[in-house]
Image (cartoon, rainbow, N blue to C red; front, side, top):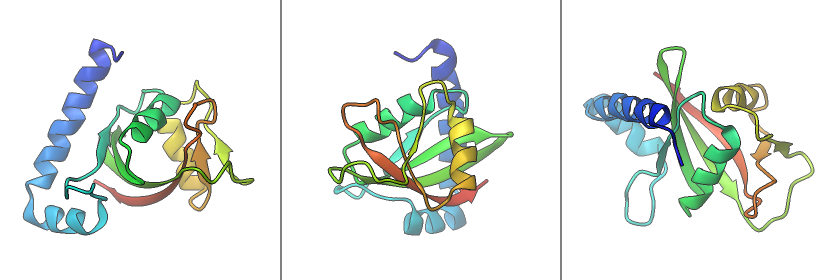
Length: 138
C-alpha cells in the first residue's frame, strides 16, 4: 500500500502530466508515441522518483498490456519513458536485474546508460522483462 507521501507525489506528477496533455502540440506528439490499450486509452503509470523501481515494474506488469509509459519527476521536470514488455520468453541472458532497494530515479539512470538492454525485477512471480525507449523529458 502506498504511503500518504507517495500518493501526494503521484498526484502532483499526474496533475503536471495532465496539464501537458492539454497542450495541443504535446498531445499530438504524445498520441503518436505513448502506447494505448485495446480501448484506445493511453497506458500510463505514474510513480515518484523515490519509489521502489521493483514495485513500479510490478505495477507496470499489472496493467496487462505489452507496452506502458512511466511518468515520473526527475530534477523538477517530468520524465516520460515508454517500456515494452516481453512475457513468456524466459529471462534473456543480457537482462539487467532491478534489485528491491533501487529507486525509480536510479533505475531510469541505469536505463539511460543501457538503452538497448532489457530490465526486470526477477524476484516477481511474473518475471516480466522491460526494455526501454525514452520518449521525452519535459
